[in-house]
Each structure stands twice: as structure tokens, then as C-alpha cells.
Amino acid sequence: MNYTINTTKTAAVATDNYWLPVDENTPRGVKVLLLTQGDIATIGQYHPDASWVIAWCPLPRKVIEKPKAEPPKCVKCGDELMSSFTSTCYACNQKEK
Ligand SMILES: [Zn+2]
Figure 1 (tube, rainbow, N blue to C red):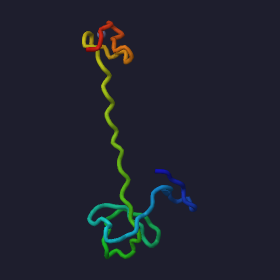
Figure 2 (cartoon, helix red, strand yellow):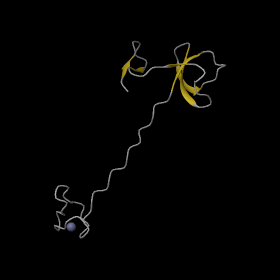
Figure 3 (cartoon, rainbow, N blue to C red):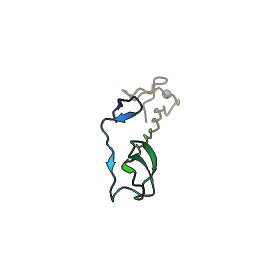
């Protein structure tokens, strides 16, 4: 997501993601970003009685980092410095099994 700082320098605003209109498909009973008539963004649950809510947006998704792969270990000496090119242990020249 890209962003810019708004003209009043009070908020970072997405340049490639837009508020969605409130309609019958707006999710209920779950947290969303809400935009009010006063252009105030807040987090809350949408309810049709809240007529001051003019738009909504889903929360950004969290990036889950994958754990790094363990380096291959030599089956003979346990050294982690296997050559990825020849699959041979630098310590004892054991071929990767
Ligand atoms: Zn080895």
C-alpha cells in the first residue's frame, strides 16, 4: 500500500486504497475502519443506526513472516557449512545424503 501525507499534514492517506460506501453488504458485528461525516476515521463496529458513518474499510492484513529454513547439516560431522553448489561439507567433504 502506498500513501501520502494529507494537505493539513495530520494523516497518512493511502493512494491506492479507498473507503467503501456503506450499504447492505457492510460487515456487522466485527471491527472495521469507519469514516464519519466529520471526516474522522475510527475503529469500530458498523451499525445501520449510526447514520453519521459514511464509509468503511477493512483493517489491513498482518504479514506473517515465514520461519527461515534451517541450513542443511552434514550427515557425518553435523557441520552447517554445506556447499549449496556441490552439496559437499566444507569441513569433512562428506557428500550430502
Ligand atoms: Zn561434514
